[in-house]
Amino acid sequence: MPESVAVSQIHFDFTNVLVEAVGPERGLALADLTACQAQCSAALSAVYSRRERDLCWLDLPYAHEVLDSILDYASSVSGRFKNVVVLGIGGSALGNTALQSALGSPFHNVQPPLGVARLFVLDNIDPDLVGEFLDQFDPTETLFNVISKSGGTAETMSQFLIFRARLVEVLGEEGHRDHIVVTTDETNGVLREIVNREGYESFVVPDGVGGRFSVLSPVGLLSSALVGIDVKGLLKGAAAMDKRCQNESLLENPALLYALVQYKLHEEKGMPIAVTFPYSHRLANMADWYAQLLGESIGKRLSKAGKEVFRGPTPVRAVGVTDQHSQVQLYVEGPFDKWFTLLTVGRGDHEVKIPRTPASFRDLEGVDYLGERSLGELFRAERDGTRIALTDAKRPNASIHFETITAHTVGQYIYMMELAVALMGELYDVNAFDQPGVEAGKVAAYALMGRAGFEDERARIEAAQGDESCAV
Image 1 (tube, rainbow, N blue to C red):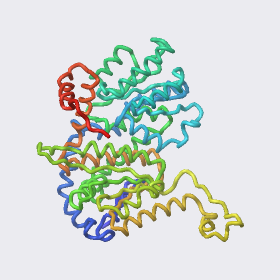
Image 2: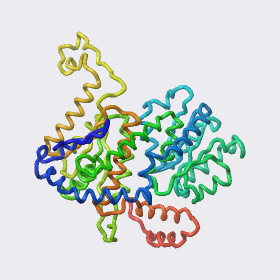
Image 3: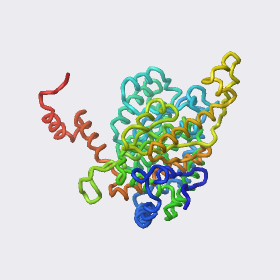
Image 4: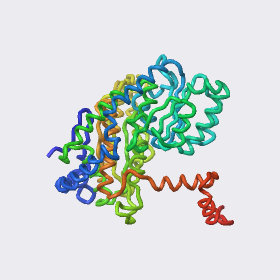
């Protein structure tokens, strides 16, 4: 049987999670994986049967009319703004950042292409962050994309009020409206009501598209289109992965296989920590995006039947080669509680040669061997060295390989991981599409901020806190 699954330009290689690579105590037997075919087929059917009901994010790759409207809007404002600012948090921000860093220049905001705006994603309400931006930005050169599916996200709405006031101060009630575009629910929520009252340009987060599954909707596509990312290529890549993943055969379906590997390493091999380890600067923020996707979806107190199970892997992000010098010591010699997914790239956009070693250094072996090689060679050697070290230490590790990083391959990766996490929900027997723990924190914040309707919660919090605290 093959030990890797090829999907167009990206490949899921699970060789190093098998017993042949890391031994029977930590590794998975291929026969045990394939014995789960019926369970996996049932999970796939359960997820895909909901695509036209309540999991509409599965059909986002085919929303061509929505894509056309995004491109038309981006074209209409092209060259008008120097800055595009996303006001959003969680699923309304992480994907935007990941797409920009994957498909734009690392120094885009220093020197963007002619006529293309810079992108800032203000995904925190830390007053030092927002205050510094207020000190620096020019409202007349800035377009704000306000993103909230519910329309009631406190962090996003507070930012909206702050920046709207600044825009109105400088541009007036009428003029400020051209500097705000909203992405929210089609009919419900306070942000939709504001759109109706103010006449802001707006885009829709469709029903059946939760925040962490929304990057291929206007949530992620609009800001990407505004800064020149190939959003058509993203959706084409996602559609290609969707077609591939409709295959029920476990060893030919990368999302299904990834979900099963995650589940078995956690539940049967005692590895609750899932480390995403991109060996690519461009893919580093994809690990942050995936951390939310995995953690919010599978980290649940209750099973689908309402039984307390306290399930969920803990996502961790590391970046190669940076974290070879900060985390790999723990990964290779620490507890056997982690498994690893390396994101690897065949060819980058640049090759940087290391000069010939100066004559005065050639007697220094620690320097001379690098001369006339390249940073790409060294980068790949470091990556492969980490993979070898993990495997030799009996630490299960897999790779998702991008031959090149393009909109098409990134679209494949996004769809693969979204589907994999949905399938994990079936395997772990939890609801992968709610977030009651997050909602509990929101309710507490509403109460503490004095929002109407939350008086009883505020009284409960104050009673629980009492008059005493413990601090040193």
